[in-house]
Length: 400
Image (tube, rainbow, N blue to C red):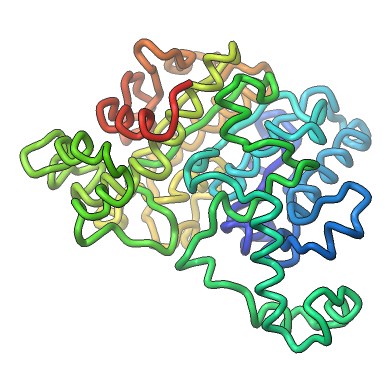
């Protein structure tokens, strides 16, 4: 199991205690955690960089690092007792985006067999930038540096990292489209969303899901929900306004999902984009499993199951500081962690998360849209996750 950490593709690392793979490895898998270049070091595109490239591409260096890590695993994992033909990639947040991007990259063909995407799908933050758009943005950034020429790569490479990051955009408060990924005609030959929609992503089993109350990190729910919906959906806004309006399907104070604005923030980002990607991947004939995590441990009642809440459970690292708001973990949490690890590792071994007496996790299909909810009562089989809300999103973003 090869872990790709999150952090918006501009921050983050696997070198933290919460990504210690020991607990997962006790389930008879080998866990490999990775790091990759980030921000301007990992995703800067520029016309001069494109010209010097034998592939006439630039940007996506962070994705190339991930592909290099997968090649290393393919070539070396047998020395650790692993099977290079049985590799599962899994990631959260930006790592989940990147898992999905790798599922569309020809450079990753044959390097993994299964994929797990936790909180991040190819439509969560819009379409990836074209190479022309990314080059233009890169040139504008470098023009702010004290160089003899914005296209002087020699001078650029002599800069210190600290000088380079003086021109880094405010990615945390203004998340970039598709977290800096570029349709560069090399790593990503086509729009990732179009690849999934046309059924051309790698034919791999997929687990994909989200937490119950998450939104794009660094953002806040809109203070004027109607205005936000209208700006997002345009002519399709009346349908969305009807379900989120007071007295509509969205409850103003839902214990799992929060206020109507908080519900909208999760629906229109992580939740319904995962639903759409599950529709696409299953329609292509790939075994797909959908989940939502909504366990809220003691100490986190006011914030709910926010972005990244499932990570301590997947890795079995239920310790103080495992989440930004400290949780008081108890037996319910340790049992749920053990259960999730069994599902995750069953899937890594066979492509099917079921087995060992676990609650049956039904494969996703478009009629009933089954999913597994990870709750305080353990795993619960359900169907049609916020269907009328996600149908609004799906009809806007594109049908499979």
